[in-house]
Image 1 (tube, rainbow, N blue to C red):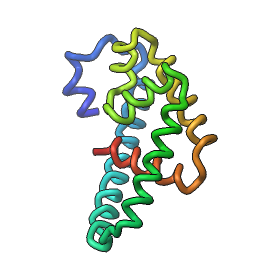
Image 2: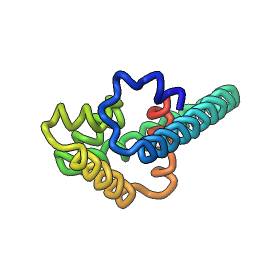
Image 3: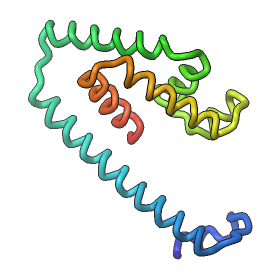
Length: 141
């Protein structure tokens, strides 16, 4: 309620206060969970960095893994790949991607769903988990 009150001048006309407040609470919960996940990744990363001493074999494996991921991303359809790279590598929001590419936000979301589905189909399970962990880590920085 306080946040709503403080932003009252910048808000457009709210047609349903109940709907607005429920959405605001939902978003606050998501933000809280996102921050918890970010803290967890930070803790895990700190722990693993202290324990890891990468060998040449590990670095070679990492390079091979990166090549597989790059090949899977390169195999995506052109527009789908653009949306995926802007979202995951450039960290653009869906709204920014839509404006940049001149498409609707819904189309951006459809391209992201398609990209993730195709990557799931093309990458093996362990590699996919690694991609999800790295992507999630980058999203919550």
